[in-house]
Amino acid sequence: MEKKPVSTSPENSGAIQTVELLQRRWLTKNAFEIELTRPPSLEFIPGQTIRFMHASLERYYSLLSTPDDSNLTLCVCHVPQGHFSPLLANAEIGFRLKLTGPHGYFTFKSSTRKPVFIATGTGIAPFVSLARSGVTDFTLIHQAISADELYYQSYFHKVTPKYYSCLPAAPSTAPSSPNLFGSDISECIRKNLRPGSYDFYLSGEREMIRQVTHLVDEAYPESHVYTEVFF
Image (tube, rainbow, N blue to C red; front, side, top):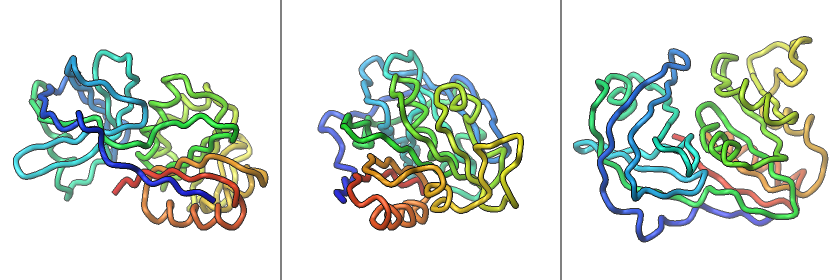
C-alpha cells in the first residue's frame, strides 16, 4: 500500500489577506458554519485549507466552498474551552480576520481506483467541497458521536447512493435508515466495501486515521491512502 502524506504549502500561499465575517449559522450546539468575504486573489483546489491568524492564535480550517464561489464557507467545531473556535462562535458580523492560503494537498487525485471518503465529525468539510465541485462516484462513510452530528447528510443522500453513517453508540441499524450503522468505523467499512483496490481519503480524528490505515493494510493492501488530521 502506498501512503501519500500531506505536502508542504505552495509558495504563493503565505501572503496575509483580510476577510470579513458575513454570517454564522449554527448546525448543532457543537458546530456552526461561517461565511466570509473572499479575497479576489485567493485561488484554491477543493480539499485545501486556509490558516486564520488573530493576535497570537492561529488555526487551519478546510473550506466547504467550491473554487467558483464568491465567498468562503467553513464548518467549525465549537470547543468552548478551545483557543480559536470560541472567537469565531462569538465574533460580531463584520469582524475582520487575517488569513493565509491555500494550504495543503488533500485534494482529489484521479485514478483507476474507486475513491472512498471517510470522515469523523466536521472532518466531512473537504468532502463537501469535493462533491460540490463535481467529484462523483465515491463511497462516503461518516462517523459521528450522535445522529445530529452527521453534518450534511441530507446533501450527501442526494448526490451519492453510497453514503453510510456510523454511530458507534447506536444499538443497531434503524430499519428506516438502512445506511445507518451502529458499529465502529472498521466494521462499517468491512460491511460496505468489498475487497479491492481503492483510493482512501481520511479526514478527521487522529485515532480514526490510525484505525482505518491499519484496516487498509490488512484488508485492502493495494489501496492508496491520503490523510487530513482534524485536531
